[in-house]
Image (cartoon, rainbow, N blue to C red; front, side, top):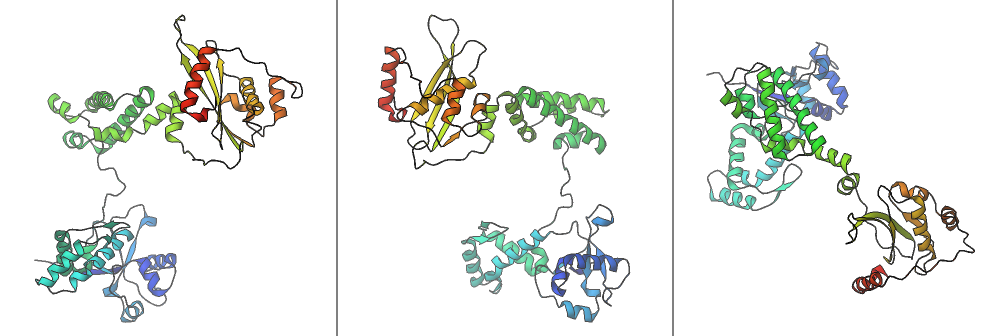
Length: 421
């Protein structure tokens, strides 16, 4: 029985570290050695690492230490570490730097257990003590049971440090499933055709979600029928019963398209999308009154008994950032109308003339069209220009009394004093 010969490999980053040169210089030295050219008078026996593609620029080389000259090995003098690890060739894929860090974490965790002799009560006690602690592992802190620790120790004592290095995936970055595993296994089509069907199905699912925002169950139903049609048109040889079973999509597949619901919400209701997806800053109370004034507007539908249709009312609100005193202006609108810049300016003018208000230092508003006039430094003079009044002669008329509204507002103010009615 032929056993694979252990191969001790040194990566270019470790080679650069041992000799005090740059990483790029080490990579060029390995590449020159592969072309048969010496490096600083030394012959570098390099071998190509597997699972690397992308032409010559994607080739990765490693140094074969057993075939190095004694002088070169003396210069390198590699200590025992996870950066210098004995692997049994051939490798499925070259390990990444993160895999060697994980191996170092494992070895640090196993150190108390390895210091005890095999099959002794002391080693069993060490396993129990290690299992009861939190350990740094792959940029996190975790606990491991005794069975896992014993398995690591057995692998380490049998095959050395290489057994602690996780297996690297040779298909990293590649799609391993076209649609769902059931369809991939039962439909006999070339991979290129399967990839084309998967891309078409992806566009279909994204399109129905963006246009209609239907439920996941409905997306699975529509795309399942589309997958059956595409499979038959591609010429797959499969019975109808097997085709129905193979084209059943699942909730795991449809989860990949949930981000398109945000696109539908953005197109349908920007305000709702903004509230749920855009970042918000939380502001604290300001030190001075009217240092910051917040403005916003909302629509309110009021149903009155004599009217057949709801009465559309626009609410323009202002909030002092210090006292949380709230001013509200109601604008009654006809059908198809909206609040204008003049309505906002009049509402702000009332705030500046109120004895609990004044001229704000900073105004925080959204980007609504009715606030365009306030999108730059505001002054009392500009407010008066917008509403067409002279600040020296203006007098506010007393609004007509409405007993029902006054009683209701008094009731609200008694419960929530910050409304300030």
